[in-house]
Image (tube, rainbow, N blue to C red):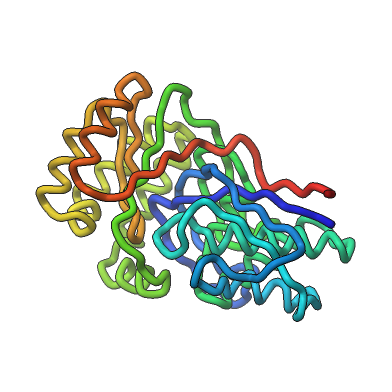
Length: 281
């Protein structure tokens, strides 16, 4: 039996590209590849709590495992912004596709195609396949078609995530584009791409979120003010129903006390140290 272990991804900025083929459809953007990881082995159900993972089911059916039972273990909730659907699609694809003898590149493309068809993501599979820290999606598309570059983020930083609400990906993308944020994000993405520097990412993403009210729209004006006063704050950004706050490690206890006053569930994330993995058990 194969088990796969896959990191998650929280995008910060993106611009969708709806191209003629599913493989070339995707997004450019920047985000963080993070742990803990989702684990998939070949028994159980394609379920996480009460939520059916459509992209994972589509992958399994495409690989000919319509009746195969899959065990999925993820420590992160679905539908808030951790790209659980993409991580799960990759994990299912690798765990089941390995039984068929398919290549990793083919299975990553399959996961991307399932995400696009299910309307649960555009660039998360590409970012996760890059696998390390700060992921910059340079060209849109599936792994092997699109291009992503990764770089480690500085040590002694803590990534804190505040879960504010659940939001359907399709509605999130629709609203993002209706506000023109995809066009506003493009020059910022290009600036970060040129620098390949975490500090540029931190500065530009925070500025973009403040100027476009993304944090304020998520937790209100007073909440935004509270976030910006977080001890040791390095950067912060909102994605779907999730708020990411990165702080200096020597101020993390003060930051947690400060952020807990917002009364949202806080989960600690760490930068991923590598891409998806497959193990024989």
